[in-house]
Image 1 (spheres, rainbow, N blue to C red):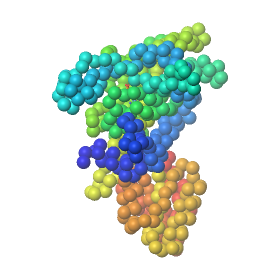
Image 2: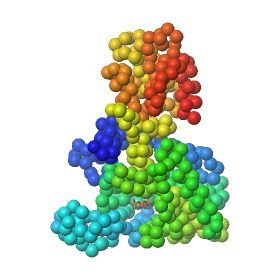
Image 3: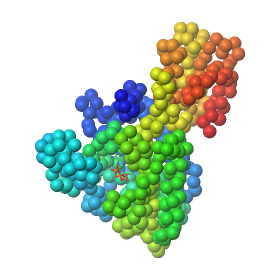
Image 4: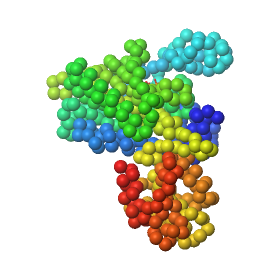
Length: 419
Ligand code: ATP
């Protein structure tokens, strides 16, 4: 099995990610996050929000509606320019994105391809109960929700340029070729910052470089290996219709170096299209636009390792779905099980930053392995010594080393590890 197959299978088996609508045969480009996946994804979003909003005084948050007045998409240029070139094979009728094809023949059957057609990625929706219904779109990027609220935010909060608006939310694209697991989906989440600056090249350049650095460091701090990250500047012809300058942060994935975040200099494109100004000028925008699902996938890929026949997900503790698992050394000794349950309950109730799980199935070795595989950084085991001196063993996922910690200190022990 190659790494991608291992990750897809681990995700399904352990409850990270399932194919969407699976019992009805699935739906291409849609995925559901299971009990562990939702924790991992939430932790990524939490860390992003912490670094982009809570730890700063020049960024505020927003949560705009997914469906907007269709005029927004006319003004933003998306009904016209949010397109990919589509080609179809004349023999097998499979469809492809022309800009992603390597040769000039169909990659599936070597058949002849049609000339590229412009294909719009916006997903149409129809609203209302009487005909004709109002046609609008599921948002193709979360960005426009920020721009149309620019004036609201300026008028209702005490922001002054330079400042940013951060948002996390779902976006939808009718992708021609969804694939590579969650990498290219039709429904996905974005985490974006629109940072408004004075309309000045030096100012824009300074902030572009600043945010580009902040963003790559964020991934490094959360454990992505440096050698698997790089920047790639967009050439003129690949830039989106709104971008004056664009650089991607790419990850060295099993299917090649791939974008998972874009840093864009959008100039005054959006605000001037929406006829919005600040004081007597139209600000420029530096944008950082990342994908939550792509980040989730790359954090999983990057942390996957095998030690002998053991699978260890070396997720950063801040991202791990469970921080701590609590076990009794053996399952059929009531006093050990009760003590372990008591410790589990206490840990669960005293701290908000810990997610704790309990397991008393199988033998202790298997339980350690099961936690390694989902990235739990620490396992607490209650043994006979616990009953005598109120200490437990704490096993570290990455070193497999154990140390004895007193039960009353567990809470602060994990708190200090997590910070
Ligand atoms: P691509 O060239 O891969 O289609 P893009 O350049 O169109 O991506 P942007 O419009 O810059 O992507 O979107 C910003 C971020 O949103 C991307 O870096 C990515 O993380 C995420 N994203 C975009 N399209 C998808 C998708 N179909 N599935 C999952 N995530 C996506």
